Length: 232
Image (tube, rainbow, N blue to C red; front, side):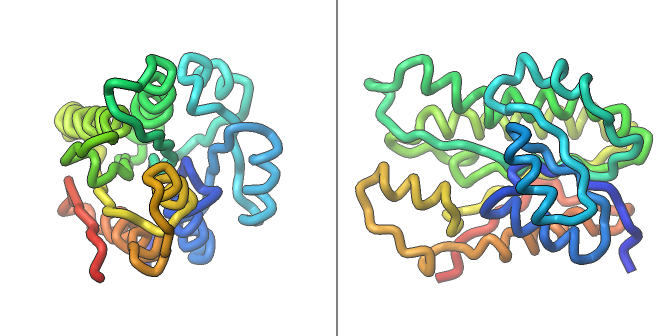
């Protein structure tokens, strides 16, 4: 029996994040769900009765510390699950700084800032930081430059954090899903000009299972990196 724990989740509104939040909620764990605005926070709270919410916009990492400073913070945090992300494809020849900034802010700088802010609670609990990365965090392809750069950076963040916090008992995991059936994947297909068939790709529930495997692993071990690929 896994003891009840407190998890902070970004991206709990759809896709992989929604699957993870539902599974943790169903087993009775405490959830703290990060929302980009008050309306989204109300939606998440209604979907997960008893869960707490925090409001901060990952697209504006410079203001995350201020935003969280206006709200009650959890005293204990066992797991910080970075699942939110955005994607915007385009060739390097056409990508403007705004597109780079948007993806780097949300996919890399915001997770770094959230991790910094919650490290005291994570250290006290000897907790776990888990980053949902991407296959693009390992290999970059044409038109994926900005997104892949943000995810390669996220791998570097996780690797550095693992070395820095090992002595504090904080575990760090990166999960690299392949294409997963989600609203993000529908957007990618639209940008690629391809028909979207969710049955061809990984079910978010399968990625959630992989994530919970890493989170629930006994304390004598940790999963550093986990790649999840479509099985079809």
